Amino acid sequence: MGGSAAQETPRCPRTEGVEAVSERHADLLRDESNLVAAGVERAYFPTSAEELASAVREAASAREPLTTSGARTGIVGGAVPAGSRCVISLTRMNRLVSIDTGEDGAVARVEAGLTLADLTGRLAGYRWPAARWYYPVDPTEQTAEIGGTIATDASGGRSFRHGPTRRWVRALRLVLADGRDISIRRGDVRAEGGALRWPEAFPDRVLDLPELRRPACKCAAGYRVAPDVDLVDLLVGSEGTLCVIAGAELALAPEPAGVLALVCFLPREADGIGLVRALKESRLAPLSIEYFDSTALDFARSRRADGDEHLPEVPPGAGQAVFLEEAYADEEDLDARIAALDELLAAAGGSIDKTWACQTPAERERARALRHGIPEAVNALIARRKREVPDLHKVGTDLAVPDEAFPELVGAYRRMLPASGLEYVIFGHAGESHLHVNMIPRDLGELERAKGVHVELARLAVRLGGAVTAEHGIGRLKRGLLEIQYGREGVAAMRRIKEFFDPDGILNPGVMFE
Image 1 (cartoon, rainbow, N blue to C red):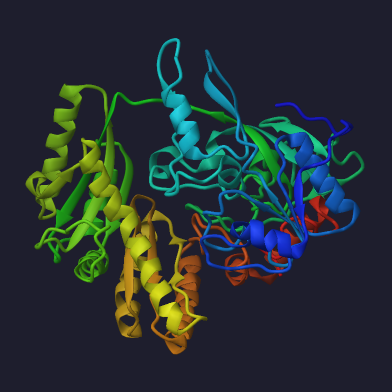
Image 2 (cartoon, rainbow, N blue to C red; image 1 turned 90 degrees about the vertical axis):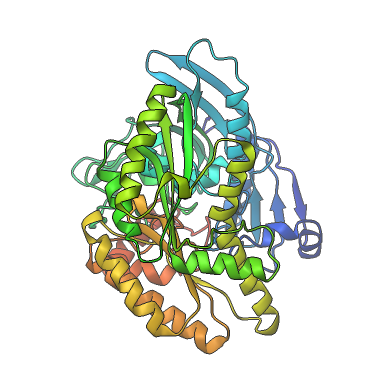
């Protein structure tokens, strides 16, 4: 991985001056959350870990807070340099350093600014000596950069089968808050009895880890702590508040011979969540299971009727939809899986005949347009309403619960949301008991009502043993949810972890904590 705490480093390329930064690099002042920063005096553009370390060291010596920026695909404001005088863009650190195969599998060594799409393309074009390998983490945005996905422990549809990013991180190259460039490999540093010792970085200090109950489900809220936590797991998902990710060694997975993608439409009165449960309990092994309820399909119909041709035409009788991906070994295996799926669909009121198969590029694009087009259409609608009411924004939940509590949470959605009088859609990663509710207010009164509903649902999810944010993280926009998850004392304990790594509060100020 490289890296040395004592290495001399060159001056990092930069743009200086508030006016110059705002004119030349306005994109660095916002992300997909639509939060916008102002007053940023310096933008750094490192092309190597050494230049990155130089930039952090320069900011740290002047005690100037800085924000790390990647592709800015997050929706909680984590990459927006609000409260920072400096921003560091990692986009130019975009090399695939190496690919190695051996008895233990295959790994890719990458810089933080390499995008998922570029990594996927490079792996697909690689001349493998034997079996082919791929990187299985599949967040919605393939333009996301690897460093950002590690900082947020990104997941997505296929995390149902493959887990989130942290499962695939074998080693990290990182820059600490004082500018030291250090590498760490999984297994090198582990806590013992709640005490974490890292002599290479902090020779005279010990981090006492708090005892916090982490949900037994998909969770991206706060730091991952445990009495025996691996240091890599503590840093992955820390949202740039403990260090800056410069590069990583990523494990790869064997590429399946084929993947069958299907959009299965069900009648409005069918039990779509029951089909999801049946798929999980069957002999099938889906890579992903996504669900769209009637509000999502009706919203797609209405937006298409209003001229949004990016959305595909939903079949007239469809009231719900389940999207799944199923890996198969050969044609015989494929036929057996289709037969098993047809039985499950028939029991749920659907059939293969009412299903979109997604084998050709055009068919895959139609499914993608449905899966990604609905949230994009929500964003477009709220953007239009925002022209009339500038402070307006959507309110999106990101709640997950253990499987046994999922029916209760879905039942709460179906009671509370219609009663709220708000416009909303429901879709998401039902395979992991993780659905998104997007509430679309029309005015500021509805916005406050939507926020109240969100808080009430978040408290319910925690009572059910779940997470207030399963994949989006806390960022700057969901700080209030961290206390719902862990309580005031839990948040204070996480602040102490932040202070151990970053005593001057240099890194990503305002992310996770006020």
